[in-house]
Every structure is written in C-alpha cells, then in structure tokens.
Length: 605
Ligand SMILES: *[C@@H]1O[C@H](CO)[C@@H](O)[C@H](O)[C@H]1NC(C)=O
Ligand SMILES: *[C@@H]1O[C@H](CO)[C@@H](O)[C@H](O)[C@H]1NC(C)=O
Ligand SMILES: *[C@@H]1O[C@H](CO)[C@@H](O)[C@H](O)[C@H]1NC(C)=O
Image 1 (cartoon, helix red, strand yellow):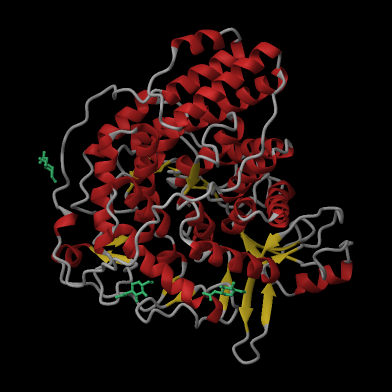
Image 2 (spheres, protein in one colour; image 1 turned 180 degrees about the horizontal axis):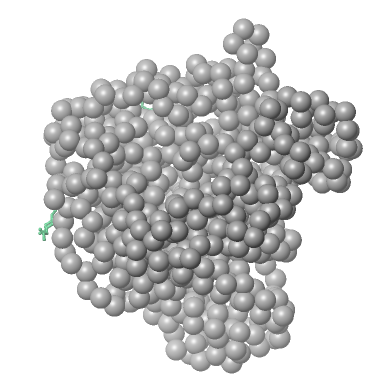
C-alpha cells in the first residue's frame, strides 16, 4: 500500500471438509455433494463451519440478474501512437516443477479451540457487516464512507472503490446476497467517465483491477471478468508512451484520443513497480498476452538496474521512468513509496509458477540487501524482546556510505510477511525466522502503546548489534532520544518518537501476523491477532462504522478520530483478521497469491 499482515468425529468431518475443499480448489466441483454435508452435520461446531464453507463452495447462478451494460467508452479500441508490444515477452507456459509448500501442516484442533476461534471469527464478521451496511446506507456506489458524519466521498475516479475493494471479502465471509447485490452494481460502473481528469494508475490497478480479478477468481461471475478487461484496457492505455513506460497519472481525455502520453520524470518506485501482478494475472485469465508483455518491459528496467544503484540490490525511492533511470537516487526505504515493488518480486515468482527466472534473481538479491542494510534490532526495556524492525537507509553521495535511519512506519510492517513467504518459496529458513521476528516487532509496537495500536510513523533506538543480547543502556537511549525533537515524555521507553501518532485503519501489521501464522502454525499469532483486533475495533469504532484515529499514544475513553474510512479497511484489514480465525484451508497460501490490496489471485497450473 502506497498511500500517504476435537473429538474424533468432528476431526474426521473436518478432514473430509478439507478434502472436498481441495477438490473444489482444483475446480472439479461446482456443487456440494449431499453425502458429505450429511456426514458433516453430525457435530454442531463443524456444521456451522460447514454451512459457511458450503456457501463458499457454491458457485451457482447469481441470486439477482445483472444488467448487460458496457462502459460508455471502449478502451480497447484506442489507436495507439506508440504501440507497446514486445512479443519477446510472453507469460511462461511450460509446466514447471511444483513450488515448495508455503503453509504449515496444521494438525487437528480441540473442540475448545474451535469454539473460541469461531466466536472470534463471528466477531470480525459482525464488524465488517456493520461497516458494509453503513457504506450501503450512506455512501452506496461512492468511493469511500465518511464514518462519523454518515456521508460519502469520491477518491479514486468515482468507480465505487469501497464496493469493488470489498467484493472478495463479502464472498469469503459467505455474504452471498450482499455479494450479488454488489456485483450487480459493478456491472453498471462506467469506466468511460471519471470524477477526476487524472486517473491514479497505481490505486486503480491495486484496488479496482485487483478487486475485480480476485472476485472473478472466487465466484466465476463473467461480468467481473468483463469489467476487469475494460479496466485493464484503460490501464494499458497508460503505456501509450514513447518509451513504453507507463504514466503515473493518466490524463483521461488525452488517453482516449490515443495521441500518446508523456511519462513523468519523477515518481516513487512503488508506482511503476506495482503493476506486474495484476497485469500478469489479467493475461493469465484472458489469454491475451499484451498486458504481461507491457509490464514486463517495466520490470526489465528494474532488473537491469538492480545491481547498479548506490545500494545494490535495492532501488531508490525516487525513479525517473522517462529516462528509464531507476539507479540514481540516494534515499532508500522498504516502507511507503517503495514497499509493494519489493513485495511483488516473490509474488510474481509464485504467480508465474517459477516460470520467469528474473523474479527469483531479483527476490534473492533484494532479500540479501534488505536483511543486511535495513533490518535492525531495537533496544527495548525488556531486553529479552528479540524483535526486529525495518528502517530506512540514506547513502552519502560523496562517501557512498550507507547510513541506517531507525525510523519505521506502519506501512513497513508488511515486511515480516514478505520475508516469510519468500523464505518458503526459495527454501531459506533463516528468512522465515527473520520474518517472524519482524512480525513480532510490529506486534510489540501495538502492545507497547496504551491504546493497543501502533502509530503511523515512529523512531526507535537501534541495538549496537542485531544478533547478540541487547541489554537496556540508559545512556544510549538518552543519546538517541536527544536526536529526536518529536520525543515526548509520555512515550513508552524504547520509542524515541511517534512522529505521526495516527492509526489509519491500515492492514500491514495483521497482514504479517497472518503470513507468520499460516507459515509457522504458531498459536501466539492468533492471540496477537485477537488482541490487535479488539484494540483496533474499540479505538476506531464510530456511530456508523470505523474511522482513522488521530493519536494512539494517549489512552482516552474516546479517542480523537478523523471522518474517513479507507476502502482497505474492508478489503484488507478485516479480511486478514477474518482469515486468522477461519480454518487455514480458506485462501490457502498454496492456492492463492494476494496482491498488495489483499486480493487473492488463484494460482494456475
Ligand atoms: C457490449 O460490447 C460487446 C462487444 O464489445 C458487444 O458484443 C455487446 O453487444 C455490447 N453490449 C451492449 C449492451 O451494448
Ligand atoms: C523486448 O524485450 C527483450 C527482452 O527483454 C529486449 O531484449 C528487447 O530489447 C525488447 N525490445 C524492445 C523493442 O524494447
Ligand atoms: C545482481 O547480483 C547478484 C549477486 O549479488 C546476482 O546473483 C544477480 O544475477 C545480479 N543481477 C543482474 C541483473 O545481473
């Protein structure tokens, strides 16, 4: 995200459920076998689990018919001044050897544990449903809900961002009626007009195209694919540039003319670097290679520049796609503005089944540099806290020295999950452990503040050495604190600032908790998730839904809030909380790869 983680009978029935589910995952089943459902209803907790799974598995006809309307403009018919085709780039088609297993092999669950888990699952669903109903009542078909005043606002071209972003969560939660109603609304979206003359390609790609593709993968509704193609052709129009690099913002009117667009000279690296997964998957589901081909040219620029930057292995925050320069800058981060460029390297490897070796090369090279230069251990009052955090790095333009800035932010919390996933994909167990320690860093930051939420941006005092013990050193702490004008006496010891004390309903911490849980199977992550969920729900709750919090560093009965609910609250944050308490076969990381907006794409082959 660029914007500014039994008794024997029950056990057997669950195993049977899992078996059926995996058949469904192979696409062999379209209907629930009655014999199986009869067997499973033998137990109460398993049967409620089952009815949910049953709804999930039933890809039957929509409950309401959808209108057959096309957008008012056909983006596929533009005469390109600069056709971006490079037919040397085709999605890999040859069968590859299977990738290593990602998820932990979970054992049977005790009835008490199942009961507790399902209780939590329902609590998350209630919070989602409440916010969804508020969206429906006050902001239907608008981009975002105003959760305090009860209104709506357009943010991303006015194509119902919250609705499209939430489609797959509705499906995963088994909310079929709501899902079908939302899909009927999607059928009427007009990608031929926009409330803004400048279309943000990055956000359009991750929220809208990602949302449509995932909802299509899960439900098989053809209208979602049709809309995904309309929108994919709009994004593709952004490649109508002299050097084939995509624009960051698409001028709606000149894009339609096909006269050719001018690539911006300075953009943040995440923008061009976060188109690959969605466009590659669009090529996979349509069989039309043009999307994959276009985005491959962008990723080639990153590939060729990776070892030539001031910090080889990573790319600077600011890049110039007009000059195809991704090497010159001297500021580096794993957090906002760069984040999903890195996140998509191992995910592209997984999506393509390992069929394009560049993504493995880029991933391995990146992971090594990230581990070496960015990951630090913070000095904390409980010296036994063995956690890690991702910081920022600045390279001195004269000496070439790389200097760690131990500032971190909520956006960077996805790094734990990425290390875990990549560690599994490339069989690097040390990276999995690093991922767990990074995840625990963010969990620690949630627990350290009196509201149970982590601030948007903060500073820490780094240990002198990451691997050995790191006892509390009062003098070192005072020195680090003195460097930070933002330090305030009420902050928990260990933190040297809470530069931006807000919590914006962001998902990255629970995203990494989700990956760490599915990968290691460790129960502590479910506990952490529940603590985070209860704190977040309490602090963000409004009369209608949930809102961003302005200061999480001070406890209060009513926290100061901002009248805004980002679409990712429903698309990502609540989806990850929910998936913490489903059985682990639901959206298994061995069957799906999730885009940076938590939209699951079905792995093919
Ligand atoms: C929508 O467009 C497709 C071709 O792009 C066409 O076959 C279909 O008839 C159109 N539907 C309507 C309602 O115009
Ligand atoms: C097409 O891609 C190939 C492979 O990366 C590259 O060698 C070639 O220069 C590209 N052609 C054009 C016209 O960009
Ligand atoms: C970059 O360097 C790594 C070794 O650190 C190497 O494995 C990789 O192939 C290099 N990438 C390119 C594009 O040459």
